[in-house]
Length: 62
Image 1 (cartoon, rainbow, N blue to C red):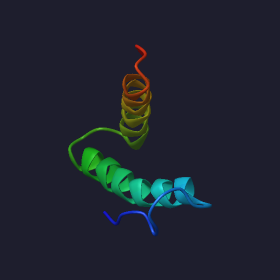
Image 2 (image 1 turned 90 degrees about the vertical axis):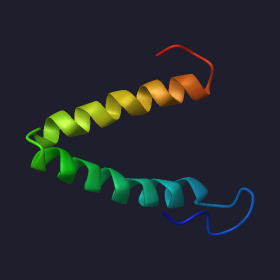
Image 3 (image 1 turned 90 degrees about the horizontal axis):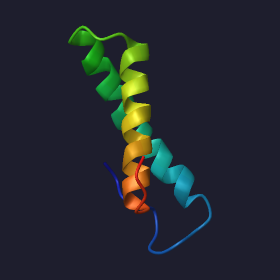
Image 4 (image 1 turned 180 degrees about the horizontal axis):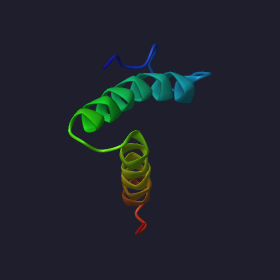
């Protein structure tokens, strides 16, 4: 995965991050479907894990 285009905060830094993470998540969904999960099951699992990670990073319980 590539890092940010620039050091520090800059316009569209969040969008850049989302684009790079999205590519990895699509690959994870593809692998999950090869393992027998549906794309919807994989997407829901990713969403729930993302919520839990966000809560943990913010010091809250999910």
